[in-house]
Length: 124
Image (tube, rainbow, N blue to C red; front, side):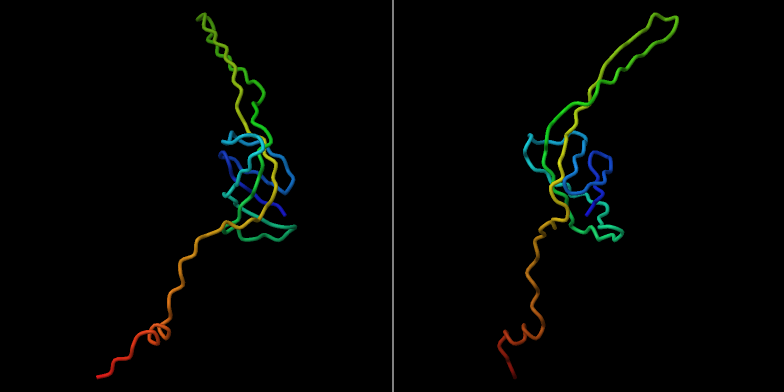
């Protein structure tokens, strides 16, 4: 089974056992995370409804990406600036797909017939 999830403004196709690198998420290595923004799910060529569908994942590590060099220059103005940046990201291992989110259900409403039977009969 696979699912398309959205996190950090990007979309990822995941299956159980996959490792993905996403934008930084809160949590320590070893803790579990639930991705509830599931856009699509399916198995083979069949697609399934995603109402209440979640993806469970485990944080493998909090890491940094490769360094990106930012160099600015304006010629003939003696202007040079050099900066480096390392984006923080989280490495996730997908543990399960398809765990339904538990929704609290309201108490069922009593039917008219039940309500009439429970109420005492008053005849004039």
